[in-house]
Image (cartoon, rainbow, N blue to C red):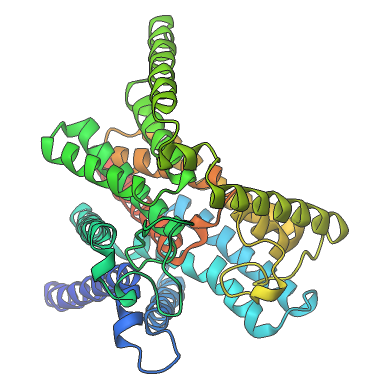
Length: 443
């Protein structure tokens, strides 16, 4: 028995190492896919996307093998993980049936839609199954945050030295530099996609470091929070600038909220004070570009707002006429035919249009269950890492879910996969804590 145990240990270590390398390579490829695309593409094929898709396929194959093998060896799976797995498989089954039996969209386009909507959720299912130690979860998060901070620093280079940089260091291959009419402003992207995608990504980093600061009060974290906030402002993206406020309010509320009259009075006073300060600041700087951008008076802002409203109306009208089938899986997302898209911005409208109302509502339900689980876990756990993960995830979800009525920053590959990677680490840490509690209670 002892010899067999010793033989099993190297195999266990290899499995852990393989899964760790897959996830770490995915994080690197995800955050730096823009550099890979711009500088390592030798054909018209997008090398960054190809690398990510290959890693996601490898991850899904590894996951499938583990689950199939686990069925025969009676592998015990955590109840929460099992529920999420079944829900994901249900969405996959229904989406596949709809794609082949109902939709009239090309199969290739539909398959890419399934990839965007479901396959890119793979880290959610993979990480909890393979990462069994808190140290492994921490390593993933550290790598993600450190690589993300490097992109934030790079975005400052893009903004302040834009006139000296080639287009290949400003935007993805084939895209035009993002700016505004009659200005020399170049909006940074960190090569993650467009400015909305990058601005939304900064909020993910912002939420994590704000959470760290609220629990540890380190000056380093405060400096990083300021740096990320500034990087967000330099994108001049209205939704994400409002997102900064949303993230701060959610994190502060979760950390300090108490169901007392005194706390309620304090919150009302703080909100009134901040609102007054912001209003005065806007009035004194009403002619500045940033204020005009935020208030919708800048020329390109007005055009963008009107276009959003028109597309939302068209989306609602189309759903009224085709409530069951919608426009077809993959037709509205990043892989859809641009000439046939009904709406280009507004993730929730895209979900409903692609899947129809019944299936679309199941997707929406899946999305909302995740932060709800994180919220309940936040109040129930005493584990500090899990608590911080829950706080950051709920705050990021609050922004993404609100902004998804207006833009598709959440659907950007970097944000979408990052979101599910974070939730995967949250579930993994939840399972680790549960096992530790169960082991303790037995003694």
